[in-house]
Length: 212
Length: 72
Image (cartoon, rainbow over all chains, first blue to last red; front, side, top):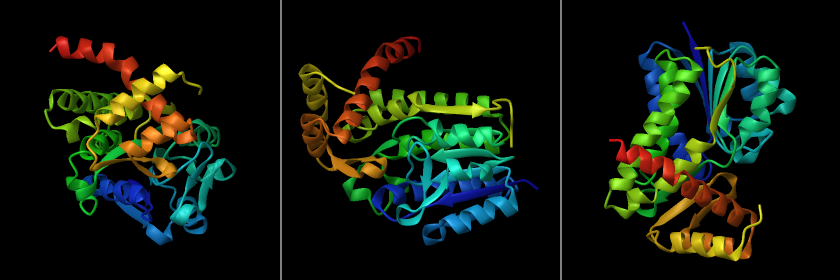
């Protein structure tokens, strides 16, 4: 049985949105028979996450939270994973929905044995409608952005290799972009620039032919 | 990244069209309304620079996107 670990923070509005939008991916993994472990909220500490990754050795790691070039941040911004602990990714395929992680943490992770690291080389942007902040999954401004972002993981879970998953993500992003361009709704249109920006900085490094 | 006044004006014009009930999340930088992003762009802060980069990426990609739309 394949194992997926989902690490998701939820302590500000940004992480709350990304937290909620992890749920469809978690459910997809469960539906596909993955053993799914979710480390979330105040449990996203350096000790807890390192311990889980080291002992479980998951096939797939999904990180959702804030990040920098060299770090993934846990609850309340605690540094949870960094270039100094990148061996924690060994043997796994990882997706990080966190700003900038790809270019430092991702590179080091692959050096230390991560099969492939998928992430963003710049800031991850999204737009949200103020009235929908308690219902991120129904927010029409955020929805196309997160559905495009989730496409990579969804595709991996369904058996695609990393290259195919990235291509699928680009396809979904293009469809969302087209819908935004044609939409008369200014709320949906506002998602256009973040969609394009995120899609343009989504990349993978490591073995692109690998699959979970 | 440095950007010219013309680029700043272009980005400000684009942001001015965003409805006021929307806000942008920019990672750990936080949440900003379009009006707040306009101020960041004018002050050339880190957030302002990220905003300009995001908008310029969009503008640069438009020819490719136009080709996609006309190929449908």
